[in-house]
Amino acid sequence: MGDTKETQIIGIISGKGGVGKSVVAVNTASMLSKLGKSVVLVDADLSNPSVSLHLGLSYTPIGIQEVLGGKNKMTDGLVIHPLTGLRVLPASLKYKPDTSLKNLKSVLKQLTAYDYVIVDSPPGITEDVENIIEACDKVVIVTTADIPSITSASKIVSLCAAVKTSVIGIIVNRITNATYELSNKEIETMSEVKTLCDIPEDEHVPASIAARLPVVLYKPQSVASQKLKLCTLLLTGETPEQILQPSLISKLLDMIKRILRLK
Ligand SMILES: Nc1ncnc2c1ncn2[C@@H]1O[C@H](COP(=O)(O)OP(=O)(O)OP(=O)(O)O)[C@@H](O)[C@H]1O
Ligand SMILES: [Mg+2]
Image (cartoon, rainbow, N blue to C red; front, side, top):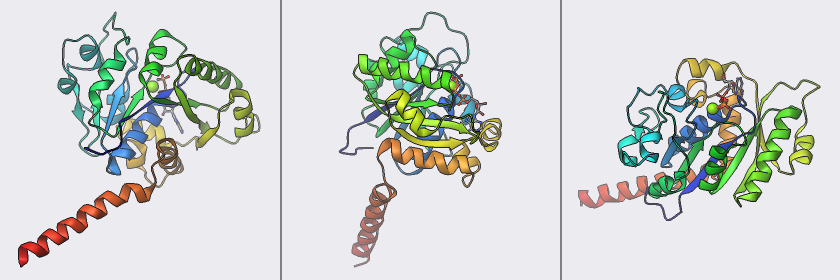
């Protein structure tokens, strides 16, 4: 925290459901946090929230619905994921009708103390998704390599253009290398957006969800984890050197302080 850099609010969006948004959101946020960045992961999927389930966080009565409704402050809702230090604003697992995401933008504006805010979203071309896209500085679109999913992703690209939110790129998830899968070139031609990276179908992903851990921690050496780490760097523009530098500097400062104290 306290960086000179502005907070980046990044939405993880898809037209089709079940393509891996929550997996991407949970793992990129966890990775950034593990790498020393201050991060809040916001679950804006009010119908089927899954962030707290993926992370094994215990149920809390205050979530994004209460914050959006003005009943509670943001700080009342934030939960800390003990393994990564990631801050999470979960969505209530109980059914709460009539919660609107209209004031999500003003809610997210309260998070200026953090380096990154990662927003997980519901699927679809809906008013809720439009509100999320408007509340974000930029978005990444997640898709699988099939025509219905890319057709839907293209609609999200148009929606982003309409509300003037930039698209960082497309993450192609659950790749099996089957001959009928669309290539990255085909996906780029159809969507007119560059592909950032692809993530293979990997059984460690559902296993990690069952274990309630991000796969980058559950099986760091798995192919999916390696690709998710790469995605994190590509979608944020962070480089491992940039991430390591501040801790190296603070180690050096600590050393100098120790030497001065000894004299
Ligand atoms: N790379 C992968 N390899 C294997 N399984 C995956 C992979 N990515 C996601 N999955 C599986 O796909 C399912 C859907 O993933 P996830 O919940 O992240 O999708 P989603 O886009 O957030 O879904 P929704 O639209 O319902 O919010 C999960 O069961 C998850 O285990
Ligand atoms: Mg999801």
